[in-house]
Image (cartoon, rainbow, N blue to C red; front, side):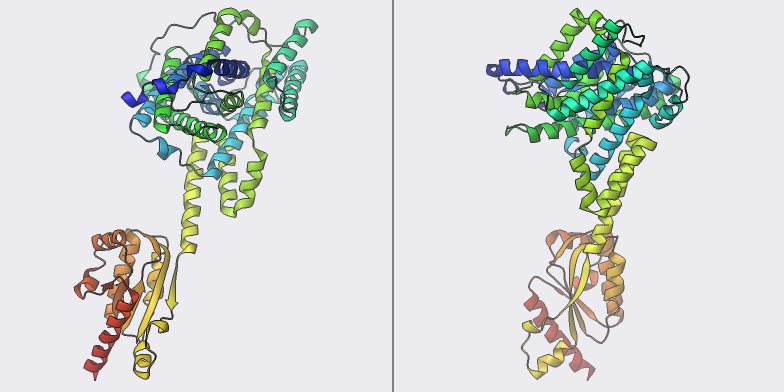
Length: 544
């Protein structure tokens, strides 16, 4: 476990001033988001703050990235809202505790690099889907009405529009906040747009006397850790929910760390396994203190890098800044209107969508565009984790289809390898050479089989396998069947250019039993053709 512990090289105390300024900048950005995500999830603004403080601190200390900023995120609310709807707010700490332990185990068993290998169209698809769901989740807060029953954000948003008693002032405040966030972000404001929106919206309500819902009281201290209550009758359901949270927490954290690596001017890259360990530890601690599961936050991490962070001290300072807010500014923060927070999240959701990347994936290939659109649609219509599963499955099918089309078997003209006198011309008529290209696997093995077993009127077929990029058990089985079918026609098969790894698969599949018996496997094409010529000569002589 030593590799997961903090080490001296993680910190450069000479840059503490730069890290302090970056940490405060991130803390200012994280404050309204933590409050908003806590409320949106169905817990409380305080739960969002506790998560940002506790999980943010531990993930920064034990994680594998120098620049990652962790806390509650919009993507996590997409998964947690249905859990709260079905089981109540008390289920979140239990699910978070289970998920945190599972994420730690993913890091311990070195599965970080495996999880991070997700196709780009799938990532873009669920990012766009998450952005849409986050915006839809804000509709009840934006209208300042009670949230209707339901777990699907699109359905809940639709039912909310028919609820009586909509507060038009809250709508104006929320939409104004969203527009302000988008506008200031577009103009490149040096002051965090979310803070401008919070201050402006709160002041308008404070001095105008408008009646709108506010955050209300916040805890003045951090809660004491305690084990959440687990009802054994629903333990299996909680574990299923924990698997979904685990998958999302791991994926989003590793994706955020990868983004930070690309933005940072540093040769030091993140350690995915250590990052999972730190994120899992942070989620466990936050859950024990009544918070919610945390992940790496891409937007806050980007602010951290752009603000001049040098080490993980910046992320630690961000958590300490939020702790000071809880200790000294809780009464002031409690006056923030919830519709303003809803507007900030709508603006944040809009900023999450990289329209340039969306255009790129839609223009790349039809397969990638299909994966992107299906993943985004399923995220909104069904569930985020189902969307990732469907996206990965569809991407795999598309990759399989691409491999099938990229594989081929070609009849080669090998006359340049022969002496073109009359005898050898006659000899050449009884030898054919095929080149196998691409990957020979279960998707196209039957095509190779059908094509090659149609050959007739020859004595020797030479299969050139040096251009095969890969072969699986089905491909090896097809090769064996080709050899057996041709032997039935009294046609011998020579193999040329078989790589050691390919030969091992062929031998394990018993495909080479007939070939190796006659020693008809060659490294060089000239040797194969020379042996084929003598073989045909003997065969023709015996037939006479």
